[in-house]
Amino acid sequence: MWGCVLAADVIRHVRPPQLVKGMLMKKKRPKHNPILKAVYLEAVETQLRDNNPPETRQTFERLRADGISEKDVRLLIGSVIAVETYEIMKSGTQFNKERFIRNLNRLPDQSFNDD
Image 1 (cartoon, rainbow, N blue to C red):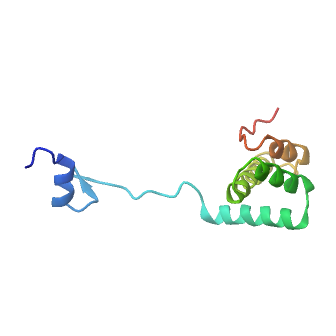
Image 2 (tube, one colour):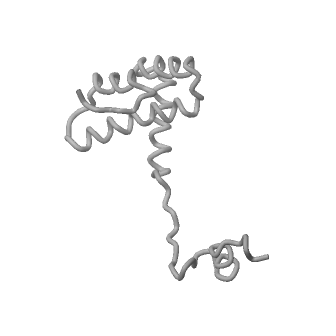
């Protein structure tokens, strides 16, 4: 009867799920900051609504035509905004429209190396 029960299964039934093999399991943290994600997605919405820059709308239409879901396209464009924000903060420079458009054109590839 007990032959097919794994030791870990027995431990889970005997001890609280947080305690396995005598160790406290840590709570997983989200892989992203939900507030920043919301801010970047709002920026995507603003760029699409205002058609500024127009390359954002063009990228949106191109990726949708490639069969990528609307949600995923918005996330991809948001990642380009995040990269540009990071570069501005890291280097203390102004918005680089050429780099931004180059990264939009690379999507869905997200290898945003500055050539």
